Length: 410
Image (cartoon, rainbow, N blue to C red; front, side, top):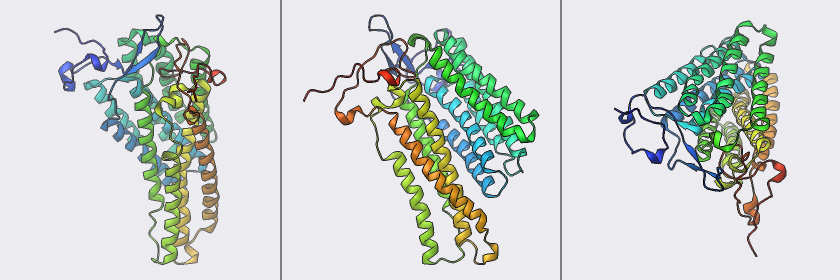
């Protein structure tokens, strides 16, 4: 029996996953179309690439840990700074998994085992969140490091099976996975108590700097880059954000001491706050996929979009915890002696901060897209070897995004 080869979706029949063998090589879900002057012109994405049930379940497991971070903050087990750093550490795990799933696909026995192992490691990340700081932070950081080391396995398979992407896989995934895995584990074991958060922040900043160097200074030609399936990435991010909002709603579910109009009115105000944030995130200023920053943006714009999205999702999660603290203080107890007004006041100020930062980062996120459709401008093609950052068409850096545009005639 011939050994199965890595292939594009349209090159293989629609069979059950095991019919090509229990162990299949990974494939790129977007392949370059080498038709314009011998250069890669645009990416041909797999039709019908959707978020799988396994990916949705993975996001649910991750957001459960984010919800538990909020509970630890509400109960005083985690200071605010530690909760924010722990959230960013968990987000690194989500980003590593999502970018891999948006670039490559393998539906064999080994990949299913890896996905199961990643979910189990995420479960382990949340085991000690009820402990006092810094024990809970150390535990989460340790298992986050294990997560990145497990992610090394599927990326190593890409390096072995797709030789045209070996340099890209090494820089974009293998080196970061190895660095973040060993660094998070080392920080969780050896960092002093007063420097554990500083160590985690340093690891995250180092990973961001490496991405800027990899994409900005030493970007490979298109033919040697594995582009992201933008439709899949956008859908995955939207699902993740929607699950976060679902967890935020738990902050509104406070059992009042008496079911008066005031209590129900306060709960309604809390829900209205969350619902309006959802409307802003999903139903306002919706750009066409062809003009999404992941298609048309350069390095600076894409990195700004990603980091703005990280901050927005984090502030929304923190907002749910603050709403629960405020509502719990106001309506959950009948006696004044049981009410911690000082903590409620602090949570209220944090809530206002979350709303302001959330709106600001969401605005920045939206400004990174191409809004030329408002003015009737067409999306132009670009065959530059160095652009775009992750997908098939078209603009380079922010400074030259207006080149090649062909406005519609009046």
